[in-house]
Amino acid sequence: MIMQCFPYLQLNGNTREAIGFYEKVFHAENLGVITFGEMPTTPDSPYPEDAKDLVAHATIKVGESLIMFSDTFPGQPDQKGNLVTICITFDDADKARPIFDALQDGGQVQMPLLETSFSPAYGVIKDKFGVTFQIYTEGHQG
Image (cartoon, rainbow, N blue to C red; front, side):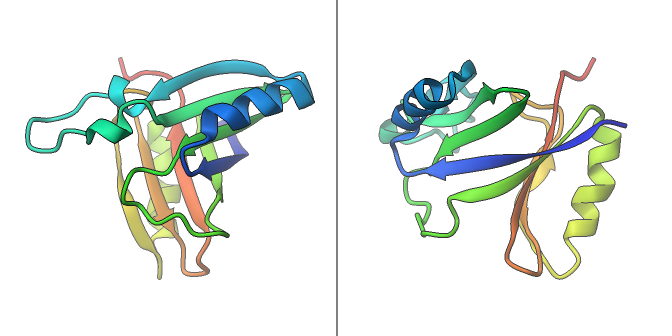
């Protein structure tokens, strides 16, 4: 099993600016940006117009490390102190599930562990200590 931890910065509408800044400062490589408008929606829960150009997920490579980013979703609270979460990445969704489940002990699920357009198993949970973890599985289910 491969498991890694990466900082995940959640910014309030200026993620693209931050990515450009960090690319210059760290000579980082932009590995990709996905906007909310590029993600699938359902008719009963479309994204608001003001969210479509915001960054849903982005990654830059800094040396041998990664920093991941997103903008806060419109209406989601933007609180100082919640800007950095810990993103635990896995190479296997079956290995991610027990970690996600264990973090629920005394914690609060903010997004259930589900297949998304960018991950076969992705979820967000705030643990009993108030630390927010994103569980992210690389690759595609096949």
